[in-house]
Amino acid sequence: MKNYMVILPVSAMTICVGLPSGATAQVAVLEVIKAGVKKVIRAVDLKVQRLQNETIWLQNAQKVLENQLSKLKLTEIADWTEKQKDLYSEYYSSLWKVKSAITYYKRVKELTVKQVAIVDEYKWAIGLFQKDKHFSVDELDQMQKVYLGILEESVKNLDQVLLVVNSFKTQMSDAKRLEIINAAADKMEQNYTDLRKYNSGNISLSIQRSTSVDEVAKLKELYGVD
Image (tube, rainbow, N blue to C red):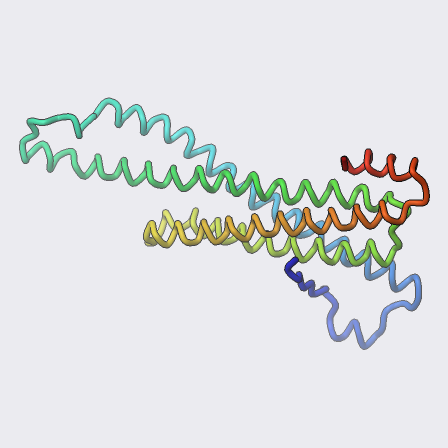
């Protein structure tokens, strides 16, 4: 699995002053990480909501567009005069450009669904791991660091998708839009795969630490493992 680096928001001045020692320090650092995770999730939620709103608008626009294209059926008109072509071709071309944008937004909608799945997978896993007696505070601390790294990467992916959204207001070729979307999709899929793989490894570790058959059965039921 890819390594996810996490840079904690601790300034040089804070380090000079010093953190609490022992268990108190451990709790303090863990709280910093938890706060970072919450902040990133809020950022993800806002970006996903923005993309969803854009998608809803374009879904409505698509209905209007399809009605217009159905009425025009310009490609079926065989006896166009040059004047008619000049009159309608620009409008017709504009409609197809909008239709192309809608196609991209359908892909964007798929990516937002994947991003929501990443956050849901994190919430599901950490909620169970924190209740699992087989994990120490140090291990839970490390889990949060890994989760924070994955979630921060996912925010970068969303930023790339938003770049495509904004590109319809500026100049960007279809090839470039497609390149950005595909790259973001690949990274999101990798984030999701890494997250599930990491969670699966932790679940297996918990089961290995079980001391009885009954305990194994309960854990498998808890985590939904066959």
